[in-house]
Structure formats: C-alpha cells, structure tokens
Image (cartoon, rainbow, N blue to C red; front, side, top):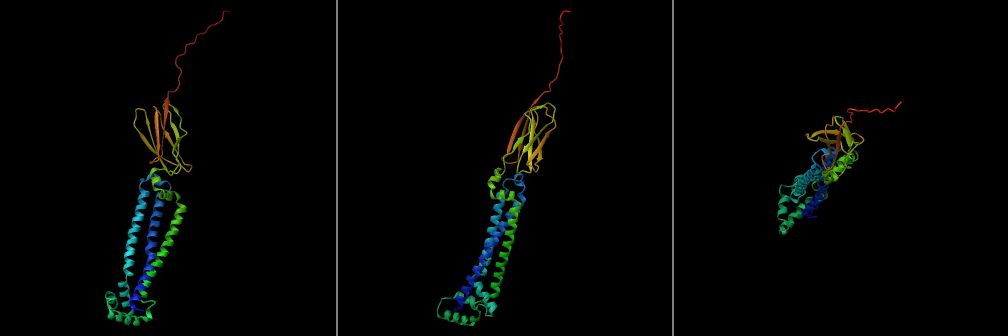
Length: 284
C-alpha cells in the first residue's frame, strides 16, 4: 500500500475517533451547567431571583459549550490532519524528518513522487495497521475520557432532575418562569371585609410553590408599609397588621405576575350614649 494511502487512512480513522469527544464533551458541559442552575433555582428561588436567570443559564450553557466545541474541533482537527499524522509517523517509526511531510507536499506530482511513496510504503509495511500508535493512543484516551465524563455528568443530571424538579421546571420553561406562570395563582384568604378601628387584622395568603411572599398595606391617608412573609409547608403565609386606624388596602405579590389585593373597611365600635326613660304607670 502506498504510504500516502496509509497517511490518509490513519487521518480518517483519527477523525472518527475525535468525533466522540468533540460531541460528548460540549453536551456534558451543557448538562453540568444546567444541573448547577437547577439547584440554584430550586425550591421557588427562581421567583425571588431576577426573572432573566433561567434564560441566562441557557445562554451561558449553550454559548460556553459552543466555544468549547469549536476549541475541541480545531485541536483534534489539527492532530488528525494528514500533515500532523505524517509528522507523527516520522517520529514514531524513526524516519528522517520531513520524509513524509515533504512527500505530502509533492504528492501526485510525477513519477519520482510515486517512486518515493512506494519506497516508503515498503519500509512501513510492518506498521500499516498502526503507523502512529502513540498519536492514536492520545486520541483514544481523549475519547474514553469523554465517554467517562459524559456518563458521570449524565448521572448527575438525572439525580438533579429527580431531586430538584422545581429548578428544572423553570429551566425547561424559561419564558413561563419569567412571567411567573409555572405556579398556581396567589390569593389572599381568611381576610375580614370589615375590622374594628384600632383592632389587629390577621389574614393569610395561599401561595403554593413559593417560599416568600411580599405583603404591602396602606391605611387611608397613610404611607405604604411592607413585610416579607414566609410560606409554610402547606403553601400559606400569614400577616398580622397591628392596628387598623382607617380603611386598609392590602397587596400580596410573589415578585412576578402573581398578585392579589383586597380592601378592608374599618368601622367604629358601637357605643351607648345618654338614655332617657319615660315610665307611665296605670292609675291605682
């Protein structure tokens, strides 16, 4: 077999081996970044964090994986190029430097090039199947490493999917997460429509899927007051307004599209004023 055919065959074989790492490693990078992002966004934290974070996680994951894929393709492509393969064969088979790389430059140029190629082919007949074993071994190790790394990241992503479903839900539906449409509507419940002047007012907010709820209230003629209420395991948060001195407007929000509001009227306590009693007795 002509030495040029040996070089081209080995380069083609190395390109096939290099296809595995330059494909699996960028995919593993995407899965790893998304798994970390899912852990960060889980347990309703995506509601309190900036709304663009799920989209930013995708942009960062895909962008970094694309850049890494281009880097790998160029690096592995250089190693599998015919000139690099020819240089590796020269070093590993003890040939004169430039014997094969120079032959590649003048290939198909005439009888003398064919004669030189046949001569070198006879010298490399014993190594036709593995003309550059060390170069092939490096790319094979990179392939095995990529398979091992991809399997580990895939196992990590599968575990993260099972343990952090809320974070993955936000990542898989980033626009719905931006709008806050991945959870049930927020509602103010157990709130009285009227309250006695000066009395405390207690109410609850149904907020499934959230961890914190922002509550704001304002009495007529007064300024806004604000508090953060923790949502318990039943999906409810409680608020206590110490004293209602005027009609109250109460707003509840999860920081996204989930909002509810109520108005509580304040009434005065009933009281008893002066009493005049007229007694009329029958004649005795």
